[in-house]
Image 1: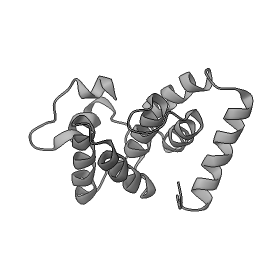
Image 2: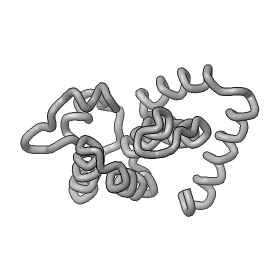
Image 3: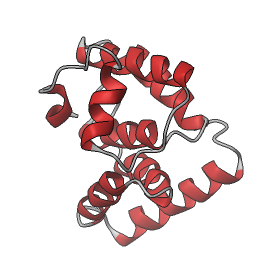
Image 4: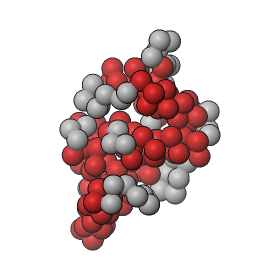
Length: 137
C-alpha cells in the first residue's frame, strides 16, 4: 500500500477515485461501497488498521476486487495484520480471478517466495472461501 499512500485522495471521489485511476482494472463499487472503501483506506493511512481491515473485509465479502487486493497486500506486508503469505495469496488470487491485474502481478511475485505446499494451502483456502461465500475468512 505504500505506493498508494504517497498519493492524496481526489477531493470529489476520495481514495476510491484516486486508486481507480492507477488501477482501472478494479471492479466498480456502488456509491455506498465507495464511501466505505474511502473510510477504510483513510483509516489505514491514519494507522487505524483494525478499522481499515473491517471495512476492506466487508467489501471483499461483497466481491470487491479492489478491497480483496488491498487485504492481500496487508497480509503480504504484515500491515495491520500478522504477515501471512497464505492469506495474502488467497485474497490476491480471488481478486486476480476477477481480472484485477495488479493483484495478478503481486500474486506472481508472492508465488516465488512460497513453497509448493504453501501455494497448495493458499489455493485450497481460496476455493473454500469462495465456496462458503467468504464466511469466516
